[in-house]
Length: 62
Image 1 (spheres, one colour):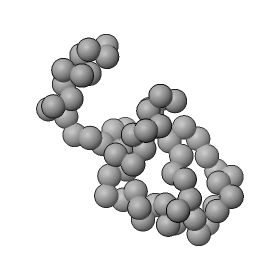
Image 2 (tube, rainbow, N blue to C red):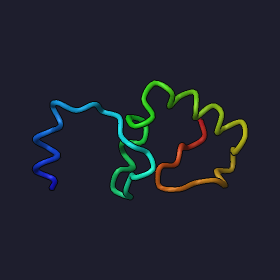
Image 3 (tube, rainbow, N blue to C red):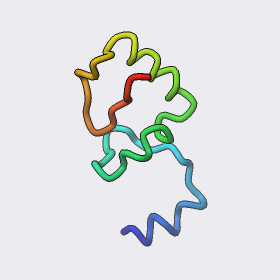
């Protein structure tokens, strides 16, 4: 499966489907959210600075 994904990577978008991210995909959070990531971090910092609401695809507060 990983070889298949690696072969498709040059033809794929960098973003992904957030709801199906696995624990080993945490390095791709910013890529998956794309250009909205920084704005989402700012919103997260304002409304959840203690990071109470977090899951695998967590956006860390700015």
